[in-house]
Image (tube, rainbow, N blue to C red; front, side, top):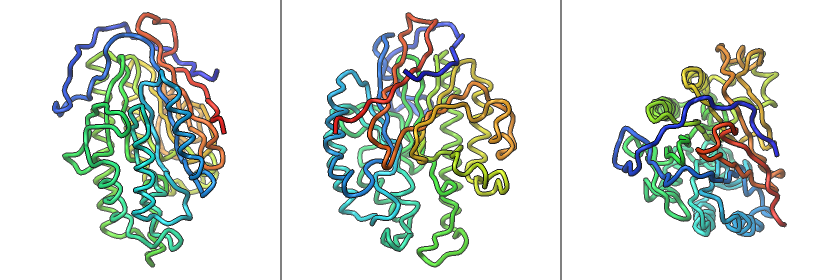
Length: 346
């Protein structure tokens, strides 16, 4: 079983139960005891007609894993060359509703950022983002599938950004996008540079992400949590972009502030930090900000050795989900998180 190598050294502490979703300063606490638990992650699925046809069966495979506490879809519910239609969104929402576990979903770039493309329907991406929020986030503070309360940034217009805790592990799911966090021009609409409305959206969403990241770590520190888990669509360390980014770091400029905040918070947090993402479609487990990493030069940052990153398979590789196991409080010598790929049956 692949597993991370960093171990927490913080002492156990008892976390008070019953935090309410209405409390603006803190994430929702869903823990009822100190027992071990598991959760599942998928992303960049379904891609294309064949995978769309298989998607209901994929969901049932995940549903059959009865011990999962929740499931996260880290974005991209379609490929990058298909139409971003209302009908398609509705179809996927209907399928999401068949999850018997709580489902946390963060949008991917294929369903809004890249919808300006002619073969996607030449939509205004911001209009598509509004539609996604209408279809998938119509009940802010609740997950899809089975209901699990989560703290959202609904008050800032981002109901998709959510936080919650399970057994002294802080989870933070963030709308951070591919296509350089949505800074690439909307060429399908005839644009050659980012528009003012596009830049305003990126600024607002990035500021919200930064605040949520900092708030997640502040709460985790206050509660003496055992780990922080961040989840995004964007692969901010996409290996296929490293060579180009080394020559021209500006192609990753949309992530610079976010990476800087993750490094700062990771280095001040006395426990492991995990980043789970999709976007690049190939399973990976590494420490992209460890000392000596070329990404440190790209982003102009110091190292963050305690950050472990896991990329889930997607697109044609989306033949499995990743099951994460969280150790119980009574096993302080164990890694907080371990993981394995679980193949779909068909």
